[in-house]
Image (tube, rainbow, N blue to C red; front, side, top):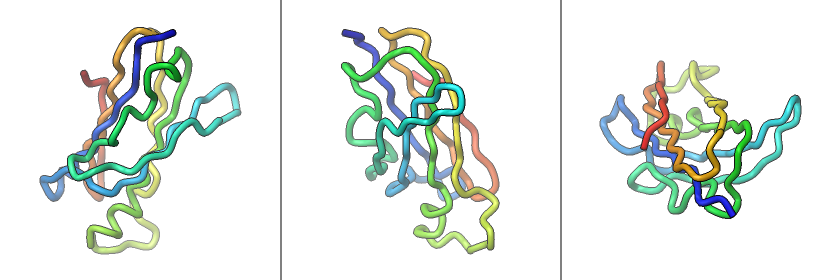
Length: 119
């Protein structure tokens, strides 16, 4: 059984706080197929309460995290736009090592974001 796992962390860089209450959906991607694997909401630290893809369910392949930023920005009182510049943010990435810890954080503001492979 693989020992690897996937975590994420969302920071609201415009407000300088962890992004609490942001919904995240994880899909496994194969060609045109997207299979939903998990859906979680970030806690007060901007993290999910458990790995979004825990040991035992973790494996190599292509995945996509969808960060539902528009609903989060609405809930935090960010001045509304119709439509929002950033709404759902997809991050597609590959997992090549079934024994590793993959961490895919999101640094978010209403008009930009960045990500990287963290530790």
